[in-house]
Length: 460
View 1 (cartoon, rainbow, N blue to C red):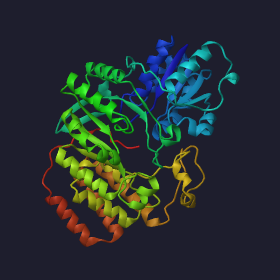
View 2: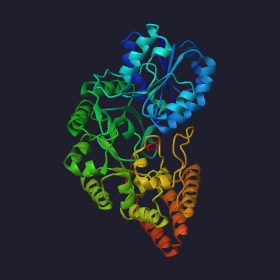
View 3: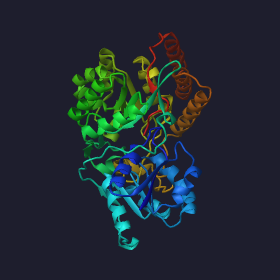
View 4: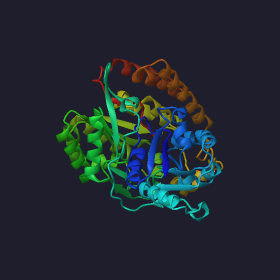
């Protein structure tokens, strides 16, 4: 059985979602090729695709699915007869659209065993009409295998870590857990995992890191939706990582609620080489935080910022800055808080222009008020389009997005792009005096030590 696993986009990471099932399928006797179209052209793999019995697209997020939809027709032209599978978070919830693209099988959750089972059925000659027709959401606890990265592109082709002027580090990627025990309403993980998370065994994670370090990795990104869902498990991993590779740094993602609850563990992160912690703050507006069910407050965010400064860790907050509940005043308030907390250098400028996506199955749909501003589900767009009740907010979004893009095109610093965004927001709020005072404060702020960041910004 010839299997081709295809990834289209995973935030500049070498995809765990190809390497892990590749190991499972090869152990089951399949011939497997892993193709990452994010960093290599489709034409380079046309022969491999033409010989495939099973083509399986990994779609863990919105962008990956949109790109997959644009290339599946080309792949079908190369191989019109192979069984077509989509697996990952976005597979089960977008059944109708993916079926229209020719999907035969859809798998979500813990997909490795599902892919192995599918290969065994196809190898046994089970007719398509007798295979499972409904999308599969698999939640069984798995004994993972060490991911097989042998035919993936070199780590140097992926996002790197900037640690100073002209200084970069090669980045590897792994996962210590999947899913999340929280049910934030806006999160695309929730419709699949529904408050559950699954552990990747410690020895598997460490072996995966070891093989990537042997290939040149100097920094590891942990892709867990929340690294402190299982803090005992996670801390044991980073301690072992640091003991074996003391010069290798890493980054993790942890929600504000957990950073406060487990503040005693932050010095351990610092001492084991954590370069920065991403936290999906999303908003400091109580109405938005409540709608998202984030379970933190504006004051919690401020407290965490203070704790990080005291401990000596770098916080990289992310936001969903434009929502149906955003106001022009509230947007300017967020910028003001970031300025007052001296976090301008910590925030990737794209975060100022993130617009809420409402995917299929979103728990936001449980809120009656949401139905007042959404349109019918857009299958090709993989989301419910929405219009803000105040046209000024939608106009602000477009102007901010343009400002960020212009700043990126000019290769501006984070402070320079913040200045652009601040001017746009203050003009929208007609707050000229505030604008001048804030920009003076920004100009007079002392230079910060270089804050490490990945060359491809993190966002959902």
